[in-house]
Length: 246
Image 1 (cartoon, rainbow, N blue to C red):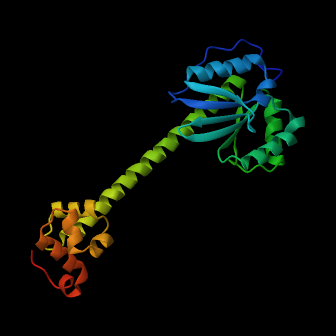
Image 2 (image 1 turned 30 degrees about the horizontal axis):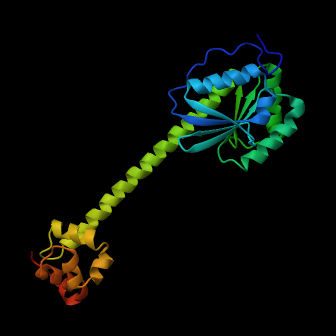
Image 3 (image 1 turned 90 degrees about the horizontal axis):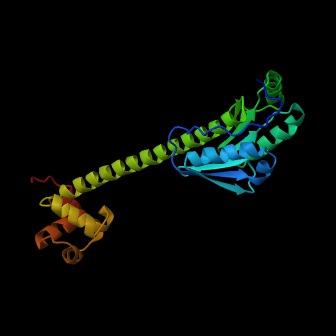
C-alpha cells in the first residue's frame, strides 16, 4: 500500500540489526528531528540502540552524522520528496558536499510519480553522478537502515586501510633494519650482535659514521679493535674501497 506522505504513522517495528556493526556514534540534527513524526524518531533510537550506537541530538548542518571506525559520514535524509521543494533540496546538497567529504543523500520516494519527479529534478539541477551519492528508498525505515549500513561499511573500510598501512609500515621498517644490519655486518669482524648494539646505542648509519672510538666503547660492548675497525671503515676511503676477505 502506498503512503500518502513521507511520514510513518505506524508503531515502530522491532529493530532488525545491521550486519554486526561495531560501536559508533550517530548525531541527529535537532532541526530535522523536530520536523519528523515521533514514531520515526523512536524507531531510529531503538534501531541504533540495538546496534550499539549512541545517539546524540545536536545542532548540525546535515540531518545525520555517523562516526564509525574513526570516519565521519554525513547524510541528508529527505523523508518526503516534494518536487516543489527540489530547488531548496539540491541547493542544500551543493552546499553540504563542499563541507563534508563523505556525504550521502537518502530520499524517500514511495510513489511512482515521486520517483519520476526526483529523476527529472536530479538531471535538471545538473547533479554530478556519485558526487554525492543519492540513495532513493521506498520507505523511511529502509532509508535509515541503509544509512546505518553505509556508515558501518565506510568505517570498516577505513579500519582496513589503517591496518593495511600499519602492516606496510612494519614491513618497510623490517626491510630498512635488514638493510641497515647488512651494511654494518659488511664491516670485517662485525657480527649481527655488534650491528644491533651499534644500532640501539648510536642510531643511524650517519651517526655511527661520525662516532669516535671512545664514544663507541662507552656506549657499546664492542672491543677496542672492533671500535677502531668501525671508525676506520667509515673514515678511511682506502680501507672501505679495498677488497676484504672475511
